[in-house]
Length: 575
Image: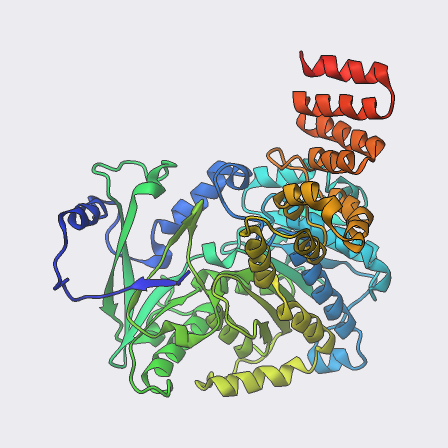
């Protein structure tokens, strides 16, 4: 997926067929909803906000917002290892003097997930954290995982989730409503603690932001002939007389076009309503100037045209979060985007993806500049993967801003590498992650799933890599069921030894796959009829009675020689 669509301001000189003209006419804006507007100020982001507020948890269960790519046991395990490495680094001798970070075991260590979705990632993270708690250099009962969302009904849903209940009862989970681009304080709904600039967290805060940046406001720019241009969006519909952009069907008909206007002075582009600059707006102006200079003078390719997105909403979120912890934080994030500025060459309009909601690619390079300028450091994929980039940002506390940001990428790399030496354990864990990371895992399971007849050895391998993720098991359930006895002894032993981990990882959601039923089928096929019955009972408890489940229970009891119960379930299956 490209972050941009091709831009050409010349007329089509080749002509179009009648069919092509019909297609083009159907894509024309017939109803303009607003005049040309700066992207971050456009109604596009009102549409996104309204979509999440209107649909709540249904965003993931019914409205098609993707979640598996980061809400799985594999990604959670990778994040937990980075977290453990960070804790180890904070206890290194001299760490406080060298990096400005310290951990006080008598105070809470907050892990705050911004936009917790429907809670599945939090469940996996805490489950795996519990499993390695004996190796942590920090007491588990002083760790608090905070699930946040902008929609209160989602938070209310988290509180009732049975999978999260053990952690809630243990006091490890708290909740809070948080608007990433507006709020500068966070009130925890269980403990009542307020975290703010007036009452910052004592320990550094760990932030998790999966697929958050791509939905936050952006601005778009182009550099042509050493001049900077702002992009203005006209948002509309290919339907005539469009009246309600919040109509769920509107996204099917949404069209947009971009125009570009020269900016006379980029250092004055970001001013508040009083004509002044806040600290954040000053940072934005410097980064905007960086890109103008980079693409005008420092590209190494001569004067070249470029188009880029500036993640103003993402930087606003980072700025707001820094107030909760005096800028002492680590953020682990995965999203679609790029950290390579060379991807911005060419005159192109940004591509707005419709994947349940609306989103744009993330300019991780700009976020990297933001962190480096404040004395922080950045870890990211060695190979740029625009479909899914995983990054880690670390900031050690208030730092004096550097006067300028160097334009040369090798200088930026040198600055970052020097700072990375303060966090050897975190770097090691991150390097392990990106040697085979979330994007690699996602492609691996997709590739094996594309085979008409995947081998059970390959399926067993991807299950192990996934940390026995239930969605992976469900995807390959037929291969496991039908090829189990054809597998060699080692594969059969490994499946029998670990298959119950699939159930321990199961996160119940009202539209979840019926993993209990599938595990019941597996154990029935293996001749373990008692275990088969126990899983069929779990299936009935969670998903209700189904005649096939009841019939299978009758078969299992028949195989055990219990004729009365077999007849009972056979009768029920026919009712």
